[in-house]
Length: 404
Ligand SMILES: Nc1ncnc2c1ncn2[C@@H]1O[C@H](COP(=O)(O)OP(=O)(O)OP(=O)(O)O)[C@@H](O)[C@H]1O
Ligand SMILES: [Mg+2]
Image (tube, rainbow, N blue to C red; front, side, top):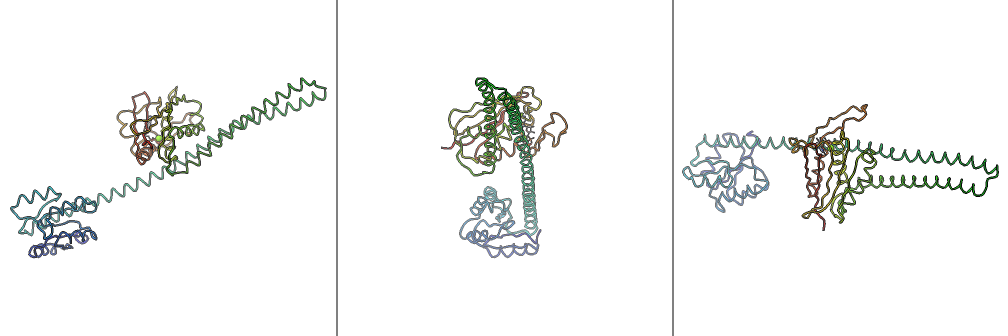
């Protein structure tokens, strides 16, 4: 401890410097010396001592205002300051504490007192530094782990997305193929009838049937092309992370269109969409909002996993310089004793794995969805609120600053 820690002694009285210097040297401490306020500030630009012993009276300023300044400056605020005060000067001792000192050392110096006080405060400072360092390391680990999980999450979403695309295209393609089979069969029949001498009127009727089937096929193909277009747009906007001005209503509509690749969301959930009639301009990254929206919908769907009549209400509006949107579900709701924890990283009530052979497998979770949502929304100067009554489902509302 003594070898690596640095003390700063601020005093201009040669006798004090001599006595204190000798005591500290005997203890094996390294120390720097300054004799004025100006010198002290200059030195602190270059080095950060572990403890400062500060005299009350200096030629260019008093120790109290120096201490006050150090406490106000982020780089020096954590350095413990001990004042050098006269033994009977209660006023100076009290004033020292008021401006942020941790302790005082009285003059004339008592060697043992100096040694003990310096040792204790130095140790306390080093302990605090150690804790800070550990906390930083832990934060780093949490961040790294969160990023890994987010990556995995995105890979899962990608896999689901591809499944959705396949589902969405397989249906229309099969019906288009079936229609073509039918037309082929009709062609054979028509050829037979033409050979047998079909009337003009009958020919027209037969052809009208063919045109009708072709028209239907056209419709199916157009819809499919539209779906593909929307999915492509979505996959592009997912990569766009730049901020721009968007109408919140438009973002919601695009997301809803995209979410229709989830057939359960598309067909089995009653959706009530109640968007504001006004434009709701916000300055955001489209990909961010899309991910927040998807996380909230995914949570709502998970919460309605066992609900017989699943319902989702999506609304938007404006209030007090904010534009907002909300997603409300009719699922299991959030118990009061966990509602304060749901935004914590890795807090989840869902299993990490479920049995995929089950017909309706339990929804799984890692507990990063809401923490991601909160972080993203707060980074956009917005806020996220939750309301939930037991067994009445949950409602999440996202507020974003209105863009003018
Ligand atoms: N709409 C909701 N209804 C009921 N409970 C919810 C709802 N949304 C979130 N929760 C609760 O909050 C917890 C944390 O949600 P969060 O989205 O952070 O993680 P997760 O959904 O469990 O896992 P992940 O999102 O990482 O897959 C959930 O496990 C669930 O208990
Ligand atoms: Mg979630």
